[in-house]
Each structure stands twice: as C-alpha cells, then as structure tokens.
Image (cartoon, rainbow, N blue to C red; front, top):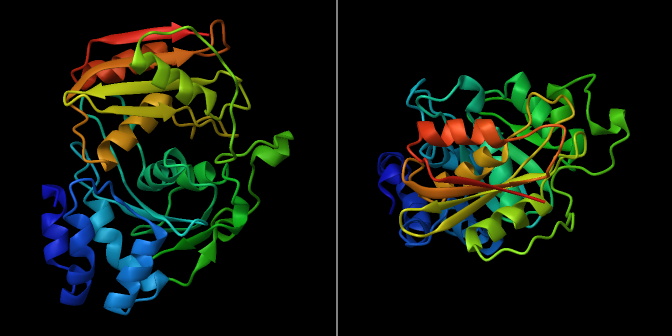
Length: 294
C-alpha cells in the first residue's frame, strides 16, 4: 500500500479495511476502482454507493498535495461505467496560486484521462467552490450531475449553480468528456513527443481552438500525458501540464521527480501554454522541457 494511504486507512471500519486491502495493496493501484471491484467491496462491507463514496473520502484526500495551505480536500467521481476515481487538491510550492488544482477538478480530470465517457456523481468532503462548479458545468453530464456532501441532502450541479453559464450559451456542442480526435499529425521519433501530440488530439479547446497536450517522463521512466481542458468562463480552464500532473500524482508518482517534459500545441494559436508550462515545471525542479508544434 502506498504510504500516503496508511493513516486514512487505519481509521476506517474493520469491515471496510478488509474489503479494500486487496486493492490498496496491489502494486499497480492508481487511486481508482473498476466497477466489478466496487461491487465486490459493497458486497463485503455492506455499504451502498453513497455510503461507500463518503467512506472513501479520507483516502481520496490522502492524494492531495498541500505544501501551501495544508488543507486536504478529497473527491470521488463516479462514472457511467461504474468505475470510481479519486481526486485531491494539488498545490505547487514556488508556482503561482493560479496553477493549483482543486479536488473536484482532479477527480473529474482523472476520470477523463482514464477514458470515462460521462460522470453521474461527484462526492466531496467540502462544498464545491464557485470555480469548481463552473469547471464541472463544462461536462457532458450537464447540470444533472449529482453532488454529494457529508450531512447534506443530495443535490444536482444545477442546484449548486443556478442561472448557470456554460458551453450551450455559446452554441458549443462539444462538451468535456465527449470522445474526440482532432487529427493533428507530426512525424516524430520521440515517444514522449508522440504522447504529448496524442493528448493534444484529445484536448478540449472549443473556445480558442488552441489545442495542446503535455507528456511527462518520470525518473522511473513512466510517462504521464495530460490534455488541455478549456471552460466557457475561461478562468476555470485547466492547462495540459496540470492534467498530466493530476495523472502522475493519483498514480502515486512524485511531481518533483520529473526527468523531462514535452508540450505539443498549435503553431500560431491565439494562446500558448509554453511560458506557464516552463515556469511551473521549473518550480517543480524540471528544466528539460521541449515544445513541438503542429
């Protein structure tokens, strides 16, 4: 079991500990449960979906990185596939506050990068801030997405975000988590650059069309690729570096042990991720950053 889970795991009820241990102890546990695993856990510990999601929040919060606030937020995103995905808030010492990731963003993006088609619910241990409500409003789940909070009745995103503004107000039909392939092509020999280009091809940038992707190579050679996730309100957009860092973090990687990185983005686009990507990676100790354009 990854050391970050030890404390939270020790506080769980014995029946839940027993049900979770085979999965948490697996060397490839990546902070998510497949549908059949959730079914087996529920059967063994006797909890329903909602109760289990609440019980798992301390484990999700253990995925947070909080060198600035020391305030841990956990979220569990439930997909239509039946798979569940952990998320935690992420802060980066030395980088601007705007580069941080909220727990709901982390869980949602984790699901997206794992290939989830749509979310049905997000469970979180603190009420979603306005930033996260707007971010989730970009999803193809729409305002019907269920939001679950401890000691509160289940509500929809529409309840938390009345009079919402989103992609449909701008006549945008391509929603976050819809399957896409933008078809960008480059002749590349570098596998890391290929991973970044593939991520750009599946990015969500219907407002600027400045599609981009980032691929990170960890010290152990593992590769983590992230895609740009744009938002109708612009500010809650999530840069491709942050989505790559989300995947690296939830998978148990160390965001301060990045060997090299590649950003793939459109040449001459109305905006660029290059300067922010280099600056944030420098704060994380990575200076070997390359940019390829299509």
